[in-house]
Image (tube, rainbow, N blue to C red; front, side, top):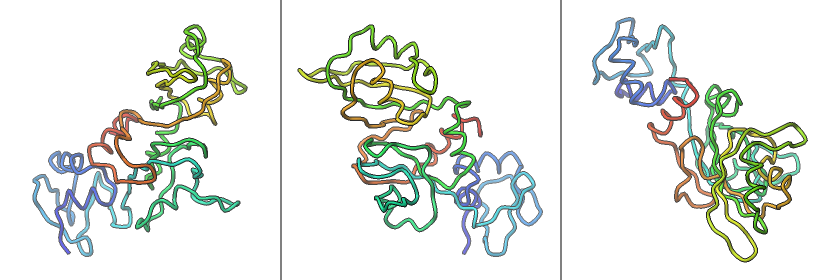
Length: 241
């Protein structure tokens, strides 16, 4: 079955459709040994040979990019030896194998990316790329400014001092405080430990953004595929574009 060249390229994981169109227009794509520089050409993946930057691409290289609104009680893993539910159990209808990018602990909700794009996953979780992650936090009590200032500067945990965090007070109740916090590290239970270090306990934690990718109104426990633009933005954030 024939399909537009840029659509085929995007489907097998070369990049977003917009990025694939840029590759074609810049003369970096060949079809059956001939350079193609105009949009609109169609290919049959079963018989046509498509090369990008001199590398032959294949349909089996299809890449998936999924966001999920992880509920509490699910393990951020592909399998669990104790039989606990994992985030993979929430991906009804997805037969391709994908992996969580980073982790959210079992009691944390919110935005989690799953993909089979190994290079993107590696860069999104590597400290070198300082990918910003924003969380909605409820803590018991009312942390004073000087305590929150310690988090803004960096605070010593068991595995070393944290990088400076961005802190925004959202609201208060009589017994708790709602805070938005942005960090670019990914230590185990980091935010819970940070607040524990200043004497306050996190009672609710939800990730709402990864480098500008917003969880938005996606219902708890649901998932959706990322748009071409969202994938493109993540690629640019970790310098793969």
